[in-house]
Length: 219
Length: 399
Image 1 (tube, rainbow over the protein chains, first blue to last red):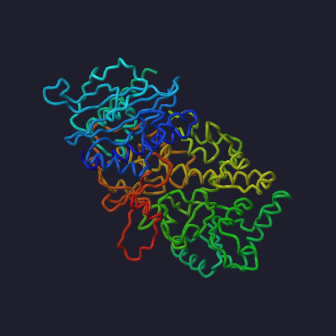
Image 2: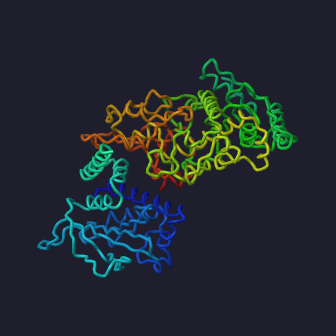
Image 3: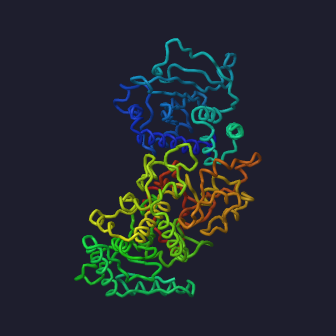
């Protein structure tokens, strides 16, 4: 990724993470989700934990990860849906060639003692000859560090369905992941602060706006 | 406009007067109280406040007719045998606000002689309408609305216009004293999807959290704005006999402090022209032209782009500069298909000089404004001769 993209993404993701942490902390009904912020006890409550780093530290780590992707990034809290009781998380996974995949997890604490969830991996093309040798998205049942997503049924496949993504690089892959998790309005917010002419951002935002206009015309 | 300066250093106050009269309009009249007059006034204010707690409200009229008060924070130079010497300018500002019919109050040196607050939050709880340093009080940028040069923090108002604005705001609040504050201003406190939704953290500063709305009167009587203007517990009794027009003045002050010191710096639900245009650059006729950006750096409505006019916040006198329903504008103004961010000049709006500056000459800092994006910019000339502004906390410049 280009340096300006790295800085803009890190700024945006950190702001998003902390805003959503604030939302959870500010609403007693969401207290359950505060228990899965990384801490010595959080693993006892849920295998999936989001980062509890301080702001400056989290940003430094993200910048460092994007500049030299190795292993995986912190787990970021990018959306809280307090109306329907869901949180949405993303983590970036470095590949040997320096590119970045993303794994996304949605968790709900509704009507269960702990959590139910599901997840998807946003991936670069597999090796030549592999049937998934194109940018794609597919479901996951465990994350890259081996933890199983809570509440996911044993029969769920992590092989299919596979969705094609019209992406060419790690940056566009990340834009797709954020679009899926946060929606086009957040992409618009990102676009304005990053001042980014990326075709994919423009396309996804234009689709969102067009859909909204259609809704307004129908009303 | 009639200005009064209250200071324990009369010589210094007179030098401010001379400097100000050099460049202010002929219609400006400046009175400097001598040390004895300042002491007498403070004594009178304290007595009236104390007696009003038990004997009914008694207004102090000694400042009637003054449009603007400038008071030093450190008053230790007053006659030490009088109680007045032990008051701070901020305490006197508080008492004046409760007990007098007085216009905007400027407190000098509560936060240093020449500082720029990188947190952008330090003055929120101050009783001053404007906090300023003694090396800044005669700065032309504090007494003008545009063509700013050099150090001139964006949050400074134009003190030449503050008195008229203050009167208009007091009149507005007096006319709406028993109306709900948030609804009157147009803020939505319950529907998080609304483009006029004001987030809980901002609304809580005036007691309007969790969908609850207060009247302008309750803002004062319930001391709901205590995080921006704390009415001391022992003074609550004064409020019960305070006339409505005085309640309206106190309420207007709390309201304006909240709007200008808490809500506007966030640049979210509402925003000013330089910040909003940075997010919606296509509202400019020619966004590649740096001069068009610089034209936004004014406290007058002259520089407002045509496309932003439908979003102007009313009543406009509640702010010291044109302000817009920013979230509404962001939602309704979509980027033209042919627009390219790459065509924009690489400039940033710098809070300490009220101007757009090439990004290569600007430094970003993580302010503490209550917003999603807290990043702001300043221009610091390390090598400039005579530069003596202090940026605090310094660590923010390294983050």
